[in-house]
Image (cartoon, rainbow, N blue to C red; front, side, top):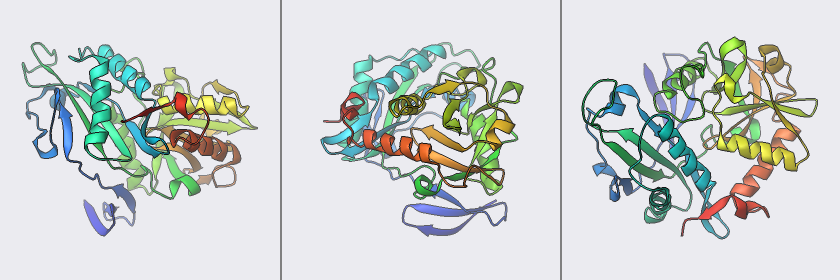
Length: 332
């Protein structure tokens, strides 16, 4: 059972299963409008049938995108890359998006602008609607929605400075022979949800998931980087890790700072003996991992290289770096 202990501003502190475990849950602040199948409707009117194919079988794909209040105006980070991945994910799962990329791109920008948001989290979703039931989606329409809302730091406001404490999950990452790790498929996140719930129930902020061969894959919803002797490694996609856009950005930033990133398998021993660890993701951003299963990583605080990459990342996404213009798209 979940019990609400207290509510403060836009956060709720929960106790899980009567344990003295507290978890910061960010409340979603509803916006006014959602783009659904080609038009904007009121948030409360953006409804689908309970017989939608995706609701039963997880047959959908999505993106997580952020817009920020930059000095030149509200801007979206790596918008074209996110739209490209949305279409690639849809193609991989046999969802034929009934709109051109330009239409979806404009819908994303308009979702921020029309909701009068200066910063936002944006969630495009492509999903099979109601039609013939059964695993094979014959004669089933493809629906598309875009929602945007104000959403704070995914792992809490203090995570940037203090880092997060994680466990090694008992749940293994789904094998890339069983799903498509380069695509953001709705159903695959049941695997991630199991890991996240188990981690929080046991007093951790998040989890690290292993893949086939007992090597690290990723966090519950983040890519992972390891630093040892100033060398950076990250698990290859073949482990089941998502080909993250923030992951790609972190590799580019590290290169600009003079650090090469190597994709190679990471063992449990490598993990526990790391000098630094950090997570990356659109919602997570760049966050240091300071302990694993109660064992400190390095000094037990976000490390020097992690902080340097995080600092440069925040400068870029907030429009305060000379190369920001290469990554940002103005909403209006």
